[in-house]
Image (tube, rainbow, N blue to C red; front, top):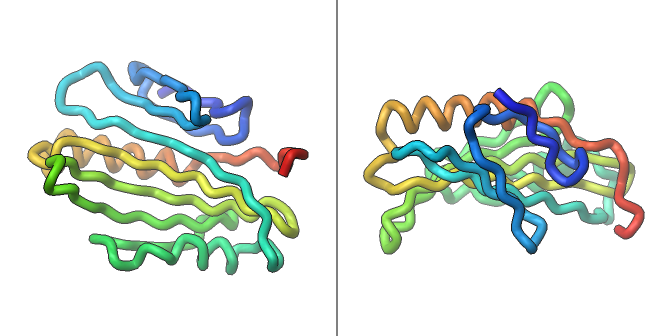
Amino acid sequence: MKTIVYHNGLLTFKLPTLWIEKHGDDGGAVFFSSTAMSGKLNLNVLTFKTTHEANTEIALKICSQKKEFMGFQVTTLPNGNAISQYAEVDESRNIASYHWEIANPLSSKHIRLAIFSYQIYKTCFEMESVQAEIALLNKEIRSAKFAHEVDSSI
């Protein structure tokens, strides 16, 4: 496994050593293996102000907004972050996606939201190797660490 240091430490997590990392002009990143039958993992992190105290309760509310999706789950992590997980299928593109959204109460009035999306062809989604890859990603994404500082431009 290798450590990914996203945007100078804004978010740190681990991925398989052979995965390739590419950053887009929009600030997001994509990670993927060069092997066949592997999906791609997209990441974007947003930081925003809240009108209420930024705490675990607010983080849970942020993560609870997509209940209509297949397999939706939301929980609090031991570090006080909230995480939601769900899957969806885009039949028109033959793509299956698995999503993780982690809300991190950053300060009294700031929340970070890390949005991970793993995409693969729908016909591959149920394959044992793909499910093992999703399980590995689930473990590592849940262990992601956020920076403690708020960007002064927010």
